[in-house]
Length: 188
Image (cartoon, rainbow, N blue to C red; front, top):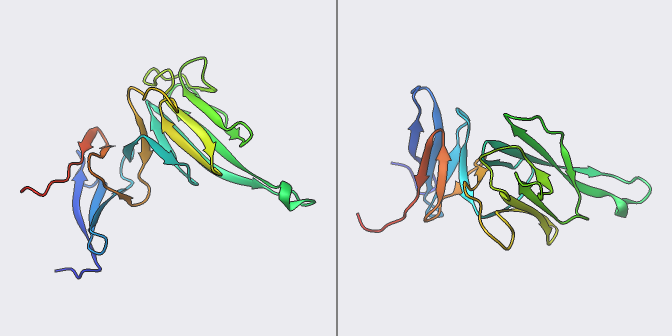
């Protein structure tokens, strides 16, 4: 029996090859919360999101496309106040190899999708015309599914679970070829 400070691996999902573990769900006794994490044996485990803050090494899945984000700081040796932090976006999909895009805070909003009206147009038939909006607000880069003040995308925007992510009621996540819906209940 584990102590109250230990966590328990609650469940694991195995693929067609029983040597692969796609993700794990663990329960933390101190916080009384469940957490989800990708185990790295497949194409990943992704949480369907409405909005998220972009951190270093954030990976987003939209359609058959992956958006990989990283930050870089350009130092101005003459004037430290003029040093700038840039967000880099690498787009990866099966149809086209995209050059990395440098996103500046001066343009504080980018529409991403398959429409010619998007700031970042991606050739992927599984994307909505406007699949998501990347924007800079309160000194933080954020990504929102669909248009910032409009419709949601058809197939969703999905965040890669590279670290423990708290599971919440009605959360939807996918791993391999399966979609999962989380529903908390006190009735057993």
